[in-house]
Length: 456
Ligand code: NAP
Image (cartoon, rainbow, N blue to C red):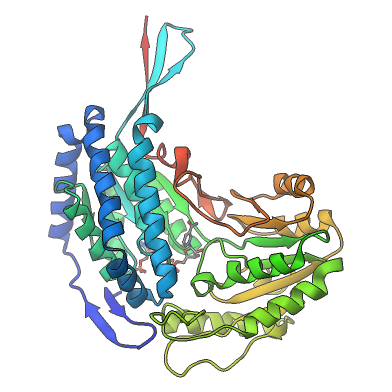
């Protein structure tokens, strides 16, 4: 696929980039490997690496407006949400800059065989394959731990956000990271496979679809390389009969429509108990019908276009299939602006288990509504999914919600708030949502040699 910015609001091709050749890839790997073998990657040099990371945070903060505009033009995000994304990146870089030393400090173990501890060492070059939906945040989630431990990185970003890819490489250079520490590569799947197979590369972190994840995880498995997979989700938003329905509905709408619904942890399935279903539905439909679709750079717009024409067409086909299989529209089909890849919010219900929509992830502003009798039914429905990323439970009784949270098969559950992500907290899923964690104390140890040392 061509690496180009095709503004999803204006339809214009803004910028096209020349793909990297195999010789470019070789140069990046040679530089990365040389760096891995140098003093730069040594545990003793961690302070200097963390200082670079702090600088990354400072640069992104200082260039917030410019970077936010690049995101909005590359993939159509509302400008306010693009600014939030930069804040998030700054927070993650600072968290690891300030806590890297503590998180990677040697861990003492019981002296059964002698004095024992585990040290943390880099493992070598890490490949990251990343998606367009949070085009800078997804990168920093992998970059910050890699810089902290000393793993050089090569990165294949999504082909529709090349300006973001380039901007992040520029930030790394400006922060003073040496050659080989971070190389952006505009490459194709065959080149990705060749990088994974290269002996100098020791890990691959992918965020993206189940489809791409299964291919890349398979390639990593075949070459016995460590991988983490942050894949799709079909998160539930459970509203119990004792919940504050007004707050739950407002949160549910935001949790579905943020980033035009293109979020892995978006609230894709509303599971609502009978006593509050009517009111919840009325409020959600009202909110859905009141969005303002418009220029992502206009502060008054509340719903952005989808990232591409293809994304819009795929979502429409998915919705048509759901309806053809018996789903009922509670709202949707409103007129959209002529300009831009807009998709008006949709709420569907009556989705039988035989309907393909029951198991599918809708990557856009389409929510599913299921009405259930009791807590057991909510849990059963939540867990009847191939995915297991996140989820939300709204209840007036936090203890009751905690009991349910313990029974839901996902990597993350949020009580009385929508899904969120910050540097301090681990992020990731189970089942087909992938494996491994990013962020927090767990994320920093995914691509690390946890080396045991024992002294007799
Ligand atoms: P995608 O098509 O899988 O793309 C993700 C990345 O994989 C892109 O860089 C893409 O490159 C690359 N890619 C695709 N096929 C490849 C192959 N055969 N070999 C090597 N690389 C390949 O995903 P998407 O549709 O852009 O993103 C949406 C998906 O990501 C959703 O399912 C969403 O839930 C998931 N997601 C998960 C998380 C999480 O943390 N769990 C976060 C965000 C998004 P090209 O652009 O060149 O195709």
